[in-house]
Length: 422
Ligand SMILES: *[C@@H]1O[C@H](CO)[C@@H](O)[C@H](O)[C@H]1NC(C)=O
Ligand SMILES: *[C@@H]1O[C@H](CO)[C@@H](O)[C@H](O)[C@H]1NC(C)=O
Ligand SMILES: *[C@@H]1O[C@H](CO)[C@@H](O)[C@H](O)[C@H]1NC(C)=O
Ligand SMILES: *[C@@H]1O[C@H](CO)[C@@H](O)[C@H](O)[C@H]1NC(C)=O
Ligand SMILES: *[C@@H]1O[C@H](CO)[C@@H](O)[C@H](O)[C@H]1NC(C)=O
Image (cartoon, rainbow, N blue to C red):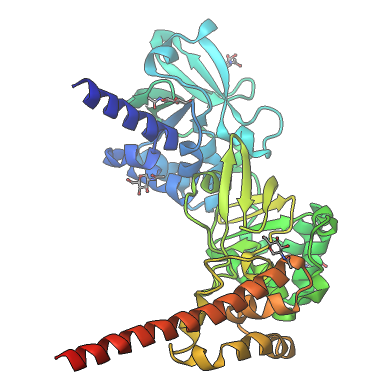
């Protein structure tokens, strides 16, 4: 009994340590909020809510949610919904016992950096007759929305309550929506101090890839100008065109992945450079509010948001992201392409050949597929690390056929001896 209890407690602790709550999962049990739930997922606000503790979600039923959504772009709906996530814990009891009967409470919208003054706050006021009203923080605003009922509480982490109508903040509803397709990526980057990155995107043509990906969802991690001057950054002038293209594609993810989604991601994240065996992915590490991207070669802090307009976001990062496929010595990626590219007996005879030849065809033909770059780049690249990976690759080339030969010998010896024995 006691040990069973201990196990249960341990599991409970583990579960809360991994994620305190899952808003999507909680609301799944309530069909009357299915539209609200769906918009939380579409805007990725669900990830943001799950990555935070101490909040109150002001849920809207399907009728109120469809009134809020109308035909608005998703980026505006996201901003409006952010007003409905209060960064404090209000269960029904606390709501009715607000000191002095009225308070202004911070919402997620206030954390976006887009909120001038206090437009990212909501006014919560106990009205005559005991009702609780909600409205914008601007003085004199009407409190048109009222507390309807409790949906779910996990004290003191998340409280979900229903309110009767959307909280309408005129400045948010009427703000011109920065439409993703109308965004000038290079202008945004230049203004944010990422001129070098912008000019590389233009000179390489990768800007076109970015632009054509925007509408389906795109998240760019833009190194600032300092990052390109930092010590230890490989000489990008020594990369082939194909390698530079892969490097720049590596700085973007083909989906809308705001900070909250980065924080809640556990698996490696693929990029525009990802192509079959060439993984070109990275992992995310979170410590409090700080988010770090780890490429396997190095890591970089996500320093600031340049634009976050569903389904498109650009974040500034402190360092150039160096993929292992180009700059590293990744044990998993190095041997992988070999069995794929050639039938098994071939490497025995030709193994030393391709390793030596690899660099020249790649340099001669810039549009070579990214698949080839892990092989070709180490030989051509100047960094010490790369030389190391070449020798490692060479070791793999030599070792694998040798082991194959031993295996073949063993198998044939066994077959032969068994033939003779029978
Ligand atoms: C949250 O719950 C939904 C629905 O049950 C599930 O699809 C999703 O993977 C969960 N998210 C996390 C981070 O566990
Ligand atoms: C909340 O709004 C009401 C009505 O506009 C107003 O009387 C009250 O002072 C506001 N509360 C706060 C804390 O600003
Ligand atoms: C609430 O969050 C805290 C961390 O802030 C965590 O320790 C606690 O277990 C959570 N409570 C529940 C019931 O999930
Ligand atoms: C985008 O901005 C850049 C730099 O400000 C400018 O040179 C370019 O003409 C703009 N492109 C479009 C399509 O407006
Ligand atoms: C290769 O790596 C080893 C250990 O990681 C290191 O000691 C050695 O100096 C490296 N060699 C080169 C050429 O970088």
